[in-house]
Image (tube, rainbow, N blue to C red; front, side):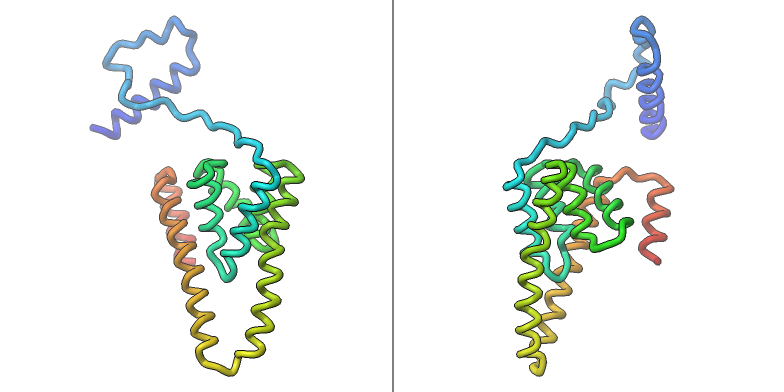
Length: 193
């Protein structure tokens, strides 16, 4: 039974962590060499402020109308490898619980994590400045073009892109998250709600 083998390997590793070294010579039937030891999380590297600003500036420019979480995941987890999947999920959960806009909360959290207090400021400016400028320009353009039906279709298309980018990021994270009954039930309850 594969599940039993994984469980026994986990139990053996936990025991080995608590016992003195002379107890660690286990018989072959009690060791589990096939299961690698759990990875030790590495602290994130200190990222230069300008590089942090540029990454969040790009995300703030591209993520108008949604999808910022997906762009951020791609850039800081997959491309730059500044944080792990687990660290990203923790930051995302914290950003969603805190009051305020999620993209700004994410910028504050990851800016602090990667560059300290100044990193947080650089990330927030990078995230907010392009959005502010684009919203001003889009508001003016919408005021001039609101009478045309095509304007509404363009806005619907932008919303669809934001939703699909967010769903793609959630599928990537879901594939990597530890699965157990509690997380599956919590995920289903969240989806239904």
